[in-house]
Image (cartoon, rainbow, N blue to C red; front, side, top):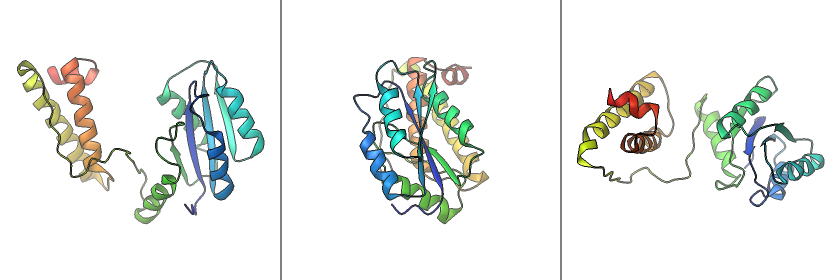
Length: 196
């Protein structure tokens, strides 16, 4: 990896005892002196808390914040950022505890941030660029799907015009798929907004 800037990765955890490979995080911290981890125990009811405490006990660059109740991934990440924002890190990001994306990819994101002086770098473990997608929906939902696609296109265009955005195509495709699903199933505020 060779991370050259002080970097913190927030790792939200909820009942991860069967998936969490603490030894892998310890190995990476041992080889990357500029990298710290902050694990957020999001109200786990299994042995996640004990596994995290044992890892933190071994290395001072692994810390644990325990939330009393399960708040969900987004809130766990937010709490990690709030706790860390005033610390001396150049970069703060988040990573899934199950390591579906290898920890070695942290270095690639930091490199992009450094090279382009980016404020935000987004990665996706799904290879989307250059792929074609087909969305199907009932005929009565077609108009809503078209409105969703237009909303995503217009939003992404305004974001792009505001400055550099990495992974724009990936983000647009993922957002379009998610919004289209929400429109079809009627499961979100976005779907309600698009229907009006």
